[in-house]
Image (tube, rainbow, N blue to C red):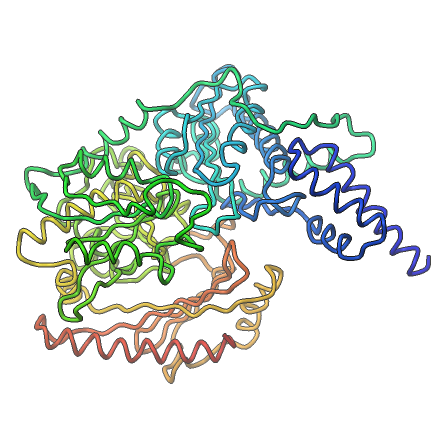
Length: 626
């Protein structure tokens, strides 16, 4: 076969796939875009053919974060057909697992009739989020499931809570979190009978999926897609639908569910021992869905002096004042900080667009400017608050009868070690998990968890995921208490450093051309491991592609492409490929032990740690070629 014949055959296969995709696509917008590209490609236009090649270069990978990508036509973008196929695969997977649960001799729970199988669906205010939610609801409703669908866009933690409250088998949240405006995504939670069957300890109920479930769901989605595109496929061409109406036969989640969330979040407060509410708060929703709920929650909790950033308070899928609507991005809080200076506020609070993350800023009197706290600083502040108060809610014990039911605080491995050191100093249990709340949520007896990417869970009893809404309330309680005592959040950080040591963290990022290159960086480090980092001997190496976390049992499902280096100076360096972006992240941490609790000793320790941190950054930038 000649090279030209092979090329012609490849082109014919691609164009045939595009034609079939157009037949199945119910959205006239993406269908029209593909029809125009197809017509141009068939007429011999190379640019159109190249565009089709990119759009059909594979399929969005369904992983533990579900789906997340730019909106557009074809299998490499987020669109209604991709969502239909994903929902159909998720349904097929769920019913297969439930069938296994029915016949499993050791299943301690009765699996009810199919009509009792329940899915809860939420969505944010991004472009097409409601359409993707309605497509999913229709597929499950047609299969006889009890479908509970929110009536309006809302925060991710509100959806996560419903998975537990309603004991639903599946939760779906349509959101792209803090990604750029043109993106959207699809997150999956498991609960009910499915989760209890797959994880007998019950720790995964209401949490996001973890391996190997993500791979099993992905394989089932692939089966659905293969059937759609088989030569003898029985799947008929889809009728064009300019709009996706709310499907009939679904139940509505609405104001009662939102009010119950607010009421139960307010219950987390301790008005007897922490009664102070004299705090002026500037709050920004970052054009997302947290605005009304967070302001209402703060006011319901007694924080009546709340000033929303008007330009960013209402949902807007175009994010006109924030090209990258992540509170951690430079410039994202400019409007909030300007309002804080104008109104002489005590605290700035900010959510990301789906309100599962929380950022904060405080005024630094020594520097004479506002300072945004890092996720690690907020995490250890909230962690100490929980240690001082005790668990914020009863019912957190999640281990079996007869096992240890002592409270545990936790953070992700790439977060600072300071909370662990503080817990050790207090004699309280602490755990470090793989990255992501899907792992933190599964820590037995968890009473507080956080990850450095501004994710916090102050109520694991009701939300098995990060929750920027209830965390805002508890952070306000903490700040108001400190103000009443004549101290500040920054001074509280000094107190923590005096008790647990100074820990400073930073990052180095290596960008690659595409996701397929991510493994090359860690593979190179395995082939030629560093013996010294910034002049200090590497004393210990953990390779999580084969080693378990310290103190953990080997578990193939938890193997991941992460390298950890410890040095004789107490440094820690972690290298891991990103799960959602074409970059490798390197987390560096330097430590110092203050000689006393005095301000001078703390200043000296911070300076020493800061110098060491910069040395680590420089060394890893050179090592990784960043």
